[in-house]
Image 1 (cartoon, chains in turn orange, cyan):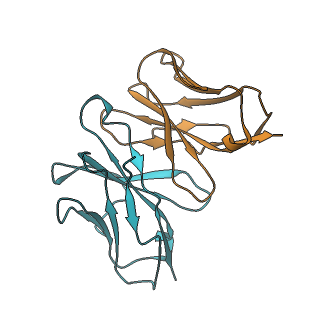
Image 2 (cartoon, rainbow over the protein chains, first blue to last red):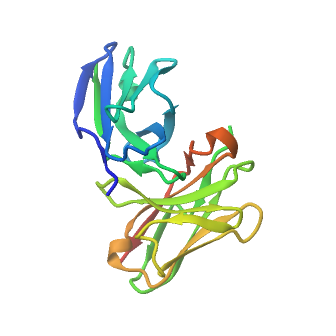
Amino acid sequence: QKEVEQNSGPLSVPEGAIASLNCTYSDRGSQSFFWYRQYSGKSPELIMSIYSNGDKEDGRFTAQLNKASQYVSLLIRDSQPSDSATYLCAVTGGGNKLTFGTGTQLKVEL
Amino acid sequence: EPEVTQTPSHQVTQMGQEVILRCVPISNHLYFYWYRQILGQKVEFLVSFYNNEISEKSEIFDDQFSVERPDGSNFTLKIRSTKLEDSAMYFCASSPAGTRQGEQFFGPGTRLTVL
């Protein structure tokens, strides 16, 4: 059973701080890694993709991948109240099937 | 910005009835997917579709389910003989060809309630 594990949270950070979200995966053959944001009652929204070891930055978001440790993380700089949502980690293996984690709920407090 | 659309937004049906959920993927995308999310649970893969055939399906996607691309724009999920446990949000997604084919864009979802 291929698993993606995330701490369910909630993770509370003050406005303007850095939020750090973590994810581990069990399938060493996983090839592509994604972070989605899901507001309550809404659909997942793709915010970052990462395919190779290291860091990838896009605006306030940085994704980090360590395949040896089977670990993916998402950093959100200058967190805003609008960032409050559930963040879903998802991975693919040889095909395009996304395997999702249960998500980490982020709360950005004023 | 182009987006995936889904209809209806909410479908209520009686147990044992058939439902068809409809999706219009992003127009230049070639890969299409259905996922579901039971309330409070994780998003689960159902099926992927490429070049007019199923490319991968999960254990959930049994004979009760079928998918079809009836024309050049629509992508449908049919659920036959619905069960109470089929109640969930059903999301359609699509992705482009090439190196970004794993980047899936989700529609707003159809909330299916089976009574």
